[in-house]
Image 1 (tube, helix red, strand yellow):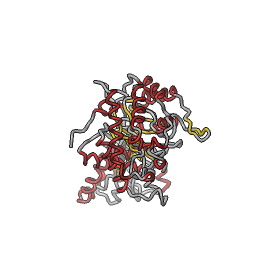
Image 2 (cartoon, protein in one colour):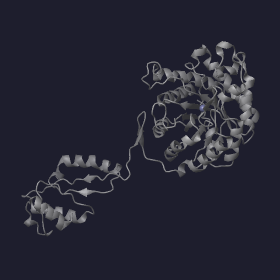
Image 3 (cartoon, rainbow, N blue to C red):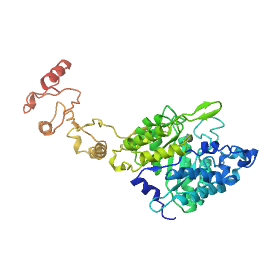
Image 4 (tube, rainbow, N blue to C red):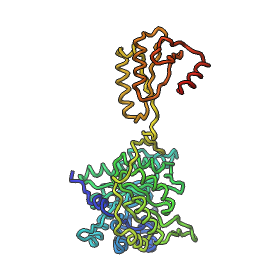
Length: 449
Ligand SMILES: [Zn+2]
């Protein structure tokens, strides 16, 4: 395998990277005819335009590079065998992705200069199926099948020379996992390693379509070692602010945010995106400055005007260094929620000192062996000692030891005995006896235990 291509990640360490704006709505704005798509049967298949109207796709890439963006996405959002099945184009997946990547590469090459690389991100959108769903149609796909779907798409993108693979608009975290696995398989097969940027889409409630919350997506995707993690599409930037705060607090990777130009409103059957260029730029500047976001850009409805304003707003901004952040401890996640394995403040564990006689036994050594790693790793902040029940027939010497221990330990004493044993005076241990409940109360009052 070739050396990993880290150029993109190295740039992210030093400055904010701006992605392009929307491909889909930019195509629509140019009113392509059925002939542009390659005939009536292919009308609406944006991904096919790389064969039939490469000039139009080049022009869209150039329109964003012209206003100063650093990265463009290939026109391959739906170019996987499941999504383009409806057009009968399953057999063209690899070639379509390869062609799209080559087109984007041609245009970025014209804009790149020494010290100012322009990147091609291989766009991998969802399949349209939801493997985690119990819906008989949408859920009718296995994880392994999806891995192969995304392996195939990734292999075409890698052949065409992308700088990174961008898994975007993730709706089902299981599908995102499959896409990461497929991307890695393709890299292994093509012996070419590029970074993976994975982005999920949240609704206005801050969750993915099937209920996964941002922290859960983060734990899952960080465990899969994606290089950049983020959010895109769906809502405008305002609804992304809170989830982004959650991601930012726990991030071990650079963060990306590529919002729509607001939530579209339907005007006479046409989706209109309400967010102005200035509003998007202001939101991004805030995300960069306050939340340490490193990759910004625009999804549906964003135009070159939007991206020009974003470029202006984040120019010269340096990303927050990852090691300036306080990371949470280890976390685990289900499909929908994450939970921390550490608790702050740490729980108070009670360390039990067993009876002195028992301490000489093999079982006690075993017990110590089990206890110590536990107390060390669980962050015990207080240790209570239990002197154990010495019994009415206790050897006076044992009691002596118990009292010495009690005086030396800088911790509380938990009484754990069937009968309370009291020595009113530490040295007068012979006066111990058992007491009833009333006396327990007195004990508490006298000794403040
Ligand atoms: Zn979008």
